[in-house]
Length: 270
Image 1: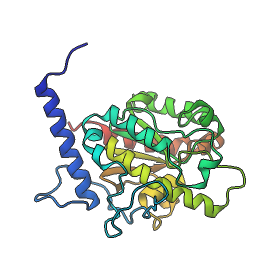
Image 2 (image 1 turned 30 degrees about the vertical axis):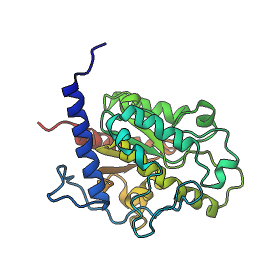
Image 3 (image 1 turned 90 degrees about the vertical axis):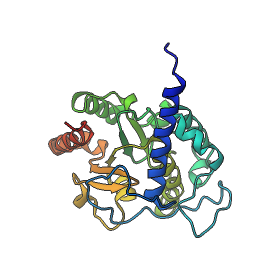
Image 4 (image 1 turned 180 degrees about the horizontal axis):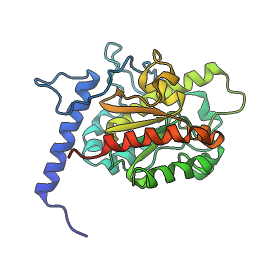
């Protein structure tokens, strides 16, 4: 195995620091003296995801600055410097979350997977029993469909992307809409941290809930489908939930057009 030279390691640290500063500036956590380095030519985000109250698991924070929600601020530099280690530490933190009622019924927390080196994040809704047993996001027929889409259209392996879900615990039986909404609010902070660590260029939102938490409540899911939006410094393209495509294969034609748009956005500039 080739050793990384001190110079290359320093360049990696500087690149990660620049990315973190861009991320914090776009969230409003700090103001940089110049324009952001990366400007996404996408439609402006209509609204931000709702603030999350993680008082049950996170230390107290100033109410006037909701953007500072990271529960482990002392480790932030380590997270951004070493993405793999950062994701491992973040997954441990997510695995210990007890911010909503779902933690009482779950067998285990299903965290995201992949390194995201391609610049693509795939965001689904939540794990089911199959994902909980496999301890991985998007399994079964939908997961097989995702793998084919990534390999055949985008020429990517799953491990090159970051595949995750808005909710990390499977829904318990008898969950009310109010309880589900509480779980979504609690999990949004974890999603923000995942995006901060992975720093995707493109997020493919699979279905209505991932679209809503990224694009905002003011845009109908049907109207958002196949159109570019922006959230957390990334270009967001809403597309169909994979279970929907399994049940309604006729919509695969539109899904293919969405994938081609993602491929074009990920392609390096000529």
